[in-house]
Image (cartoon, rainbow, N blue to C red; front, side, top):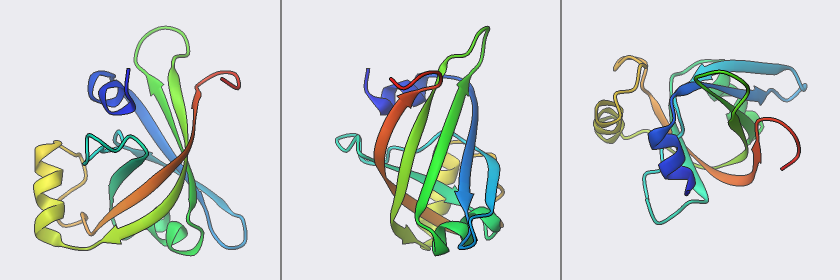
Length: 127
């Protein structure tokens, strides 16, 4: 199964971890990653507000996304990510936000941040 299909079909909770320049770690609950180009499984995106997570990826482009599937046990996925591009086109961001039913408010939807997926691992173990 492709990553885009996995995240379309799976329900659960995601956490995006970032660090600032001093190495201080921040974790934030985030929606599932967006795969805007279905032919590109190596790139995912997140709509971000002007908060600490966005500030951190501006200083340190590396991030980690952990997804815990709903249900019993520990199933899910971990993605190692690196920022490759950021967009601020508010019309495009609002269209993506509404199409994907993202929980972030329209007022807070400021950035569309694209990540290269450096690695994919299962929730448990090294994969």
